[in-house]
Image 1 (cartoon, rainbow, N blue to C red):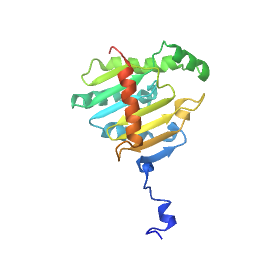
Image 2 (image 1 turned 60 degrees about the vertical axis):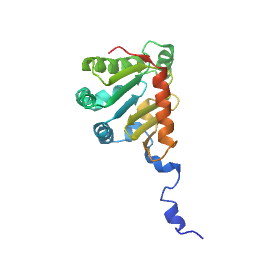
Image 3 (image 1 turned 120 degrees about the vertical axis):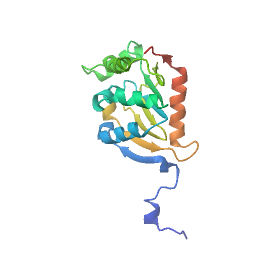
Image 4 (image 1 turned 30 degrees about the horizontal axis):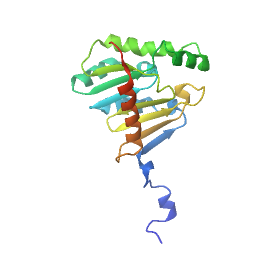
Amino acid sequence: MTLWPKSVRSHVKTGHDREIIAAYPFRSAAPTSLWASLIDGASQNLAFAGYTNYFLWQQHPRLGTRLKAKADSGARIRFLVGDPGSDVTRKREEVEGVPLTVGTRIRITLDALEKMGPVRGVEARFSDQHIALSVFQFDDQMLVTPHIASLLGDESPMFHLRRLEDDGLYDRFADHVTALWEGGRPVEL
């Protein structure tokens, strides 16, 4: 005999899945307001570990100004992007076969970061190791997109996570970002 009826137990998260706030069948199904609230609400650690990250600059007005203000207040902001000239990038461009190439999308991010100028607390690195998994970290919350086959990032599913326990889903993906960052090559901004 249990204290809670099955109908309650099936709707209340008690295991590791408690860290999953929401799941979206497509990254593009998540409201832009979610991204804005996570970006604006984070004050210590923001990591944008998407292979191109270009959509952020398209969807969030004055993102550079907002990030500079966060960095000036002590936040650490990291961008991990693919190398626009790498073989991994070229192969992905062949798979996607779209006019707005992966290399061009990466360059959009690099250009936006360059326009911010050198900002203490804002860093960028190249890595080709995260072509199939994007992780966006905002203090104790994150958005994770596992990329599916030939689909673009906005067509792949996305999970919204919140850190609630040691070595849970959030920590596993945060460790992944740390490992990629440590193995990345600095981008001169």
